[in-house]
Length: 104
Image (cartoon, rainbow, N blue to C red; front, side):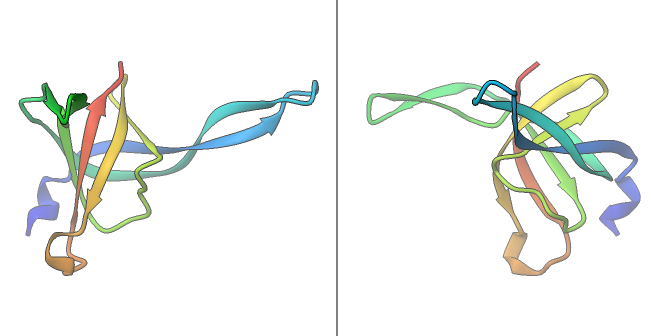
């Protein structure tokens, strides 16, 4: 099975808003969970669609089915990735393929 390749320890973070004491909301990234998975590098580039610049994914996370949303972030080995579309291939609930864009 593919899950034997899931050796990387990956942290899923979700944005939370907290009161900053002055009436505004502060944005924080809280750890949602830690999973095992595999992050592979794609070509990653930019392209224009209808005169708008769009970024394509730079990496793909492959993992077992879990709670990951397109508003989350992934942290692995000091790098932070923005989660792009999440795919459950063929709706088989076997594994997920999550497109990522490297932030830093």
